[in-house]
Length: 349
Ligand code: ADP
Ligand code: CIR
Image (cartoon, rainbow, N blue to C red; front, side, top):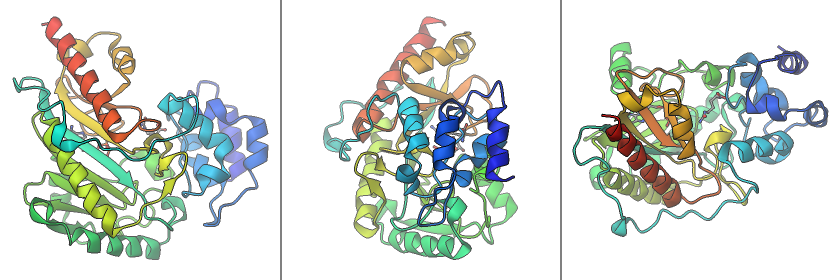
């Protein structure tokens, strides 16, 4: 579909509730339709996913880091709305003093929290996002990332497994165990996220499989720390330690006002998503479960990731906001919210 066809589809979609639909007015469309970034990205690459998937909640991706300025007329209102900020400004990175965290295990009983995961996304400076990337860009980024990962010391040290050459069985097992990504998100597919699949993609993990890095999935890097149970402090400390080491080896794209830049505007800023897989069969059966999560700035997802279903009352619940607050504040927002969620579940037993 051409840009004009995509726009016409969006314009006439009466019950579309995406942020793209909400903010892409005819005036803004006219202003942006002829613009191009240095990587050759246009409005088409940004809005294709949201126009093809009218059920999207957000509906827009950035074609490359520069898009956050070139297409600011549409991306900025979306950022403000999603992250619930009046003004677009982002603090300097602040992971807090990880030797003095005032939280540990969020569920010492082990009854509610199945596992805990914290991830950030990172973008290599000087490269575009998936819709404007070539095979060669993907291979160059993969090489850069893997070279840096090889230098990780101690418990963080591990092995890189490219998707090219990985058996279907291994891929399935790693995905079922919640370690690996796949190519099944239709929003990401429409956005060009799976172009040249599986070239340049892969996963790195350590022996314990509690530290992982996704290469060229939605973002150039997704740095992940996860483990069974509810010990958020252990998970967070491991992640912060790894980020600090990798930052010495690689240069990541950052924006003065927006913090770290990512393909999807929902991740911009800290890029941090701290989640638990938590058993809340009673609370999730309440009609207002989503509103309760929203009240604590939390977002519920199914157990196999975004746009999937819950199994047996287990939900993936994480911080929703990532922009306009620091990394430690995002984690604390999630921590406080999850404590409340568990308290509410207990009160219904
Ligand atoms: P993200 O955008 O953070 O990568 P997704 O929703 O795409 O998130 O999920 C990616 C994978 O991570 C999925 O397999 C999901 O089940 C897994 N995952 C997310 N949170 C947790 C958690 N707390 N424990 C175990 N697995 C998790
Ligand atoms: C959508 O617009 O629904 C998808 N592109 C996913 C957006 C990211 N999801 C989220 O709410 N964090």
